[in-house]
Length: 253
Length: 93
Image 1 (cartoon, each protein chain N blue to C red):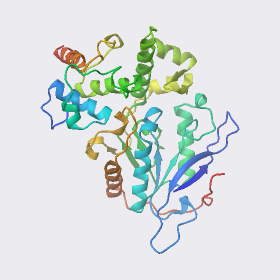
Image 2 (cartoon, chains in turn yellow, green):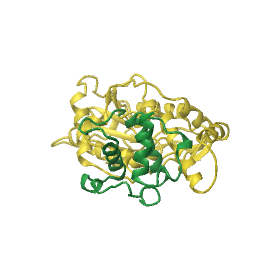
Image 3 (tube, one colour):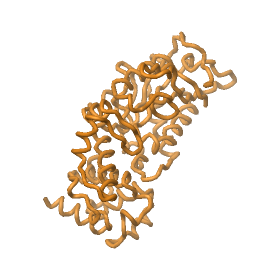
Image 4 (cartoon, rainbow over the protein chains, first blue to last red):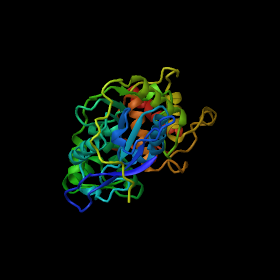
């Protein structure tokens, strides 16, 4: 496992690089390549679930990446700007800016495939083959965040509805479940319920309940192994050879 | 998602138990102990507002119903029985 960086240049801050977690398989009897982008096998860009689901699915996501490495597939999990270790402010991010960032990550890591997790399905770079795992509409996730906020407000004796909250958020932004979402992010999340553009791996195929449902974060090694195996079995064997033009893998400072 | 699991009889209580099991990470034995009087919101520390929002969304998906803001009050989430009765009433239309 390597912690690395990629140039997720954010126009609104001085932050010029973002963090990513990379897993590169070590070939039997040989040295690991000095660059993720030069790994000769498949190089999978993994896009994390969004907001609260990212936390609940973090261990599952990384467990899946470890399983992929064990069967020869390199993978990299970038922080979305404003999330994880990112120095960029979340309130200035939106779906369109995340799409640009993801395209930059795909280019930097020379990704051959993409795996989206839940609502990150809407961020899949056009033209990159891959899979949507249990895709979820950003509009549905926003609805759930608004509902949680409304429930908590009612518990605290305040009135309000999800509709009025949404109207306010579209004007001024909102702090939902600890995430400072700007007006553009709220507006774009509300508008996003795209059909899948890649083959879908359903939760049913993993034969266990989705870990995003858990009230408290959980993990399930068997589910991660099943997801990795499904990816390996449906991976097109062509078009994965690296045309290596990228910089060597640098350790994060 | 969006449909009831194939391996359940499909009655409201069974499906609701399965959903609570998924949300709370409970096994079949623990879920079998749920009765109509079992307390939910305010009784189970894991069930905070975020978890309840997730629970309601999953109920909507699996039962194919819509739960309005106005439906959601303290009584709805007071107990397993109250939530089960609410879903049954929604399904009855």
